[in-house]
Length: 460
Picture 1: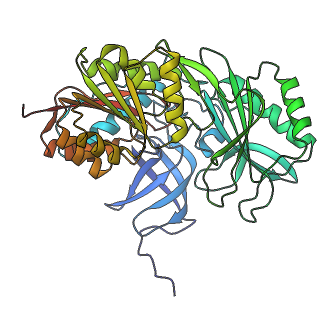
Picture 2: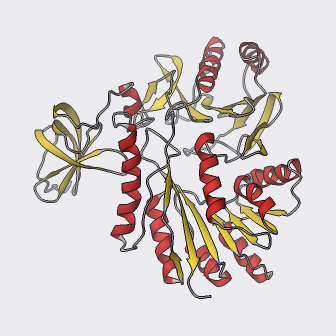
Picture 3: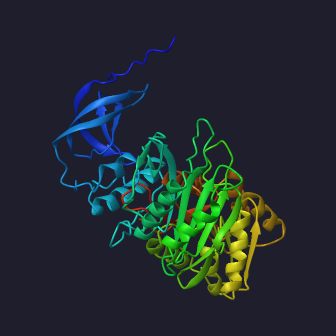
C-alpha cells in the first residue's frame, strides 16, 4: 500500500501563488503554507502566477505555469520555449543583467548558509551571451520511424527535435543537421535505450574557436557502421572543411555518453585550437572548456590570483589536457599535472611539446592518490590549482593538501555547493579566503556558474 503524502496541495490542483525565489536550476519557487515549496519552470521572483500542480512529493511539488498575472520587470521575451523545456537555456526569460546577479547571489548564499564570511564579486559576463559553445553532444532518437536529433525534455528521456540550439556555435548546428540527413538517407536506426537495439546513440561536434577546425564523432552501439564509406563520403562532401570524422564505440547499457574506443573515418584524430596564446590538440575524449570567450577570462584570473613567481612549484590537479598547467608553466619553476583520463594526459604531454614547454610533468591517476605519491616523493608545491568535476574534491585529497601546506590553493569551481563544502574543510585545516570570490559566467542562459576562489595558508 502506498504511503499517503500529507502535503498542502494535490496533483492537478490549480492555484494562484507569488514567486519569491529561484532555485539553483533556475526554477521559480512559491511557498504554500509556511514551508512547502512549489517549483515552477519559467516563473520569476516577484511574479504572481496561476499554476497547475503536476507532481507532489512529501516535502515539495512541481507545477506548470498556466498564466502570469503580475509580470516581473526582469522578464524578457523567450527566444523559443523548447530551450526551456529541454534545459538548454532555462534562464532565457530572465534579463542577462539579472542572470549575472542571480549567479553572484547563488554563490554568496551558499557561503552565508555555511557561516563562511566572504565577499562575492559581481559575475563577469559576456557581451554576446549566446552561440558560445564550442562543443555539442546531441542525442539521437527514432520518432515516427525517422532518425531525429534534438534534446531531451528536462527530467525525462523524451526527445524534442531541435535544429538551432541558440547557445552553440552556428557551425555546429549546421553540421548536426548534415549528419542527421546523411544517416536518414542510409536508413541508419537510432539507439533505443529500453531495448538496447539500434545503432546511433549521439553525435558530438567540436569546433575550434580560433582555428575553425571541426571534429564530428558519431557514437555507435556496435562494432561498425553500415555504409560507412558512403556516409563518410557524403558528410565530407557536404562539409568540405571538416578536419576530423570519427566513430566512437559505446556498447554499454548505462547512460555514459561515450565509450573508450575511437576509430578514424576520415581526416585526423584530433583538432587544434588555442587558449591564451597556447596551442592545444583536442581529441574526442579530451575535456576542453566549452566557452572559449569566458575560459580565457577564467584562467587569466586563476593565474593572476595565484600570484605566481619564477621559483614556484605548482600542482594542477584535474589538469585535463593541460589548459591551466601550460598557461602557468612560463611563469613558474615547474608544474605537475594529474588527471584520471589517460587520453587527456597523452594530449597534455603532446601539448607541452607543441608549445616547447619542458617544465611540466603530467601523470595519469586519481588526483587524491597521486597527491599522496608526490607528497611521499618530497614534492612541496607553493601553489595548488584545482578545477574539479561537479562533485568537488575528495576528502582524502583535501587531507593531502593540508599535509603538503602550499601557500595558496586556487579553486576553479563549477558547483557552488561543493566549493563551499570543500572551502569549509580547508578553513578548518588552516586556510582562509582573504580576497573576494570571483564568479565568471561560462554558461549564459543557464543557472550554472564557474568561479575562482583563493585560499591562503594562515599559519606560516
